Length: 236
Image (cartoon, rainbow, N blue to C red):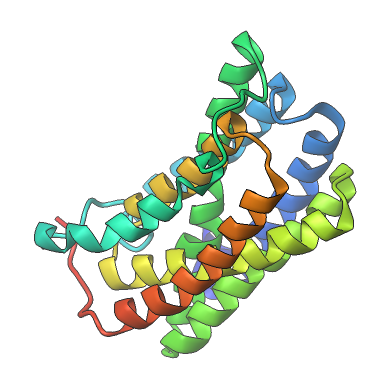
């Protein structure tokens, strides 16, 4: 794997994305978010990524070395984290109870880590190495959004999948820009995990869900313009 990463980093990233989608989509579709199978599958990807990053000395390159050094700029993470609470805007309603809820919660946290690493840590950084930041941001964001089409194979309705893809593309731009400007993956992993975890604890009001998508699109536009004007930060 390391040889592929060194010689063809974009191919390496794409392989991770394809394997992740083809392995986890059937597991999620057949067993659900609260299953042990889902948890074990995500644990396997998490451990695999961590081991690869550690052995290859990629903590710095993948944004896992720490927080941005200029902590006063910490405030620019706040809009992202506030927006990440959107799944709770329509109130609380538990999707599961007891052990299934715990399994689903841990799984969603792991989803945040795994997807940020493969779409931002691997794919975005690989394209960025070609020297075209705008192209890297766009491809990473669109790929992240389009990747959610696999939810069609888990039994999700078409319209819900399309809206989820639009939502994910908007978040893809936000997360990629924050990572690019801060140099740290940690704020992005936290935001991504918040979105997925809160989906387990929030009520399902179709109107509020649509409003959340519209707000996310609007925030993504203005937030990314703001981030584009910031100087790139350094990690601790």
